[in-house]
Image (cartoon, rainbow, N blue to C red):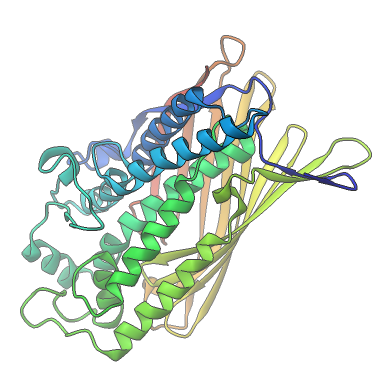
Length: 405
């Protein structure tokens, strides 16, 4: 689509290779031996499976061909595949990744659990018949009594991991030119909004209710335990508000196969995209604006973070650097600074300042098709999407990136 040089990009570059990431080592796995995968490993592996499946389906009927019939059939097949991935739970599916988020956070605080889609019920329809992670109500009550904020973090970590998966898929499309059409992020936003809407209808089960119960009643036992507070108008009103705010996630062109907007310049064209995020946090929620930018080999994403607890606002900013050549290596990373409520409290107006720094170095081999990498992350106390620790932490990761097919 063109207008005076402005272009809406909906197709990948010709002969673009598929990008995969094999996350072999994460030191979190040693810090929390009960866990099999970290939050990052789980989302990356599921993203690989999704991308491989979408590419395979597109080989049946190419959605980027010049034939309207093949385009229509291609998009139909891919959307069907993405719907099955989103709404049917099985190992390495997005629902499995959701549960791995809970599993990782529980493991980070020393609590044993297991993913139900790995050991107990390998296939399920979680929106129709929710299958919770294998942890007892008494264990949840013990977590909340010892640290109410951690209990809230346990509740939201599944949704957080699902969003992290969607964001990683979109980063791969914008920065790496992933040669697949994907409706999975849009479907995951819809599924999580539906889940939040179900919780807001006066139910007492589900992650969203555990989240809100922990925010409003930190000193009482969790929902489902003796002595727990019955959800009232205030809690239901808060959940209703969060349901409506979650619709902001749908303001995301990348979720509807709009890969970028392109503006010509005197030298190289500039590509950009925009997205709005609504993310539950241990102290309330965050409304985030993402600005994607690419010109030539340089690409970055700016995150404008707007965090809220009960009546107070806390700003933050992050810059994500897409892979760029630095001598013989490829360098990428993320740098963020934020203000969050002191102690991650739902009620306080006082703030604590924190940072999170991520650096990845990769060595391209085989003409860039194979890229082993080493990544380090260090953060101060505070909440970071995709990090299971609320306190200070240092994590080292390594793996291999592949550019194939």
